[in-house]
Length: 104
Image: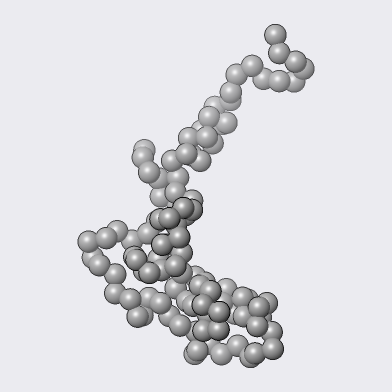
């Protein structure tokens, strides 16, 4: 017999959450690092800071980064490097999908 308020069995919601956590790509690990850097497949990291080389998915995020990390230098949108413009991904490689499932 178990103690007070301890369920004896797992709920369906808890089991489904464990399955989802095990099978959904959250963007971590070596594959996630390649995706975030935007080098191999032209990943989600589209813009690069010209000062510190940190990547961001859009200009607004890059402006927030710039205001927080480089407050003394004025933000110039035309100096932000667009990684997708300089990189042509291979058509044989699939585009990255961070929330995609490994198996169904």
